[in-house]
Length: 423
Ligand SMILES: Cc1cc2nc3c(=O)[nH]c(=O)nc-3n(C[C@H](O)[C@H](O)[C@H](O)COP(=O)(O)OP(=O)(O)OC[C@H]3O[C@@H](n4cnc5c(N)ncnc54)[C@H](O)[C@@H]3O)c2cc1C
Image 1 (cartoon, helix red, strand yellow):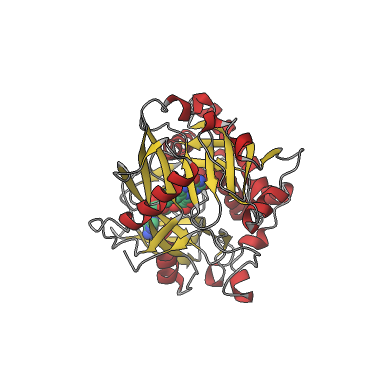
Image 2 (cartoon, protein in one colour):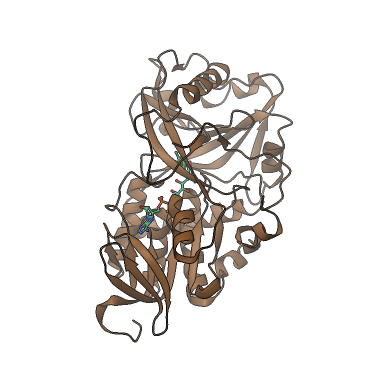
């Protein structure tokens, strides 16, 4: 604990108790640091990005820096589950499918190797019908790619697991505590004020506030970050009678992604018996504090696109006529290049504040590695894990947006589509 008075000073304050903050709090507490994890709502609330019933794991990525983070995280997921004594992850195969000339899909395959991630490429419909109980059809000109590394994480349970592990190592968690101000502090390093007029101090601060990142950083430092919240919807569909068991993880059904337009993702039937999650990787711009819960958030148009895709790629297996039988709202935190922001805030905060955000709808699976890296940055000045696994942190730097407002240069178009106005 630092030098200033009493129990209000910590080695590190983590702001935001979603999956990223919970993993960071666990990593710091495990190092023996005194940790305070602050959350504006109740812990395990459903108003951010880390709640719900399923998140996909996959290691096929069109950017070379994500597969090593996924593989490292897979190891850390196992370690955490072992420490907790229960599982939050169900392993499955993973299927990528899409037009054979899709640049993202081609790039994703190019970063797989027999040593790192063996893939099987399937380029005929008859071949694909021999897999996954014949559920998927391969449209003309498409290709399918399977890998063994897929899986479904239970997100709320996973957040609870990392919080429980952090508590076990001595972390303090305060929910219903909104951080309203952050300032450099001569004695401790950082001083944090909350909306209910409490003051906490720490040597270091890790900010993991998800879709609130842009708002919070602008209000505490004046810096405008290119991180924009999107309101998005998860759709569950009814599986046609008789096909339920074939679409379960027990039957080896995969997590899946369909590249191109529309970009679709899905998981095996797991969380709700007889239902399967198939959703559109898209959303509407929103203010995280002013979301419209009544308008449906573009459900009709998103559902129509997903239904059309299901009829083309999984015909006869899923009931599409009535639309999805259940939806859940969530938020993405988008950067222009869909790459994460993991960096020191700089300015008057120097290297005492680390920010981790902009996870752009694909961060959950890598949260254990992110939690470890931000802790290493806070206490050691650099992300040693990233260096060890060969991931350059410049891809996640704030500086990339000074060089180009679009961020990292890519040969393919963004995966997440933005539709409609604010929600
Ligand atoms: C529909 C959907 C599907 C997804 N699917 C996948 C997937 O299949 N695979 C995958 O890897 N990823 C997936 N993701 C992305 C993944 O869920 C996110 O990247 C991840 O949950 C982001 O976590 P976070 O901790 O950064 O944000 P959050 O979970 O939103 O946590 C931020 C926390 O900060 C708190 N906070 C904000 N401001 C303050 C403040 N001032 N004071 C105190 N607390 C504050 C918030 O209340 C919130 O609890 C998906 C996301 C969505 C929405």
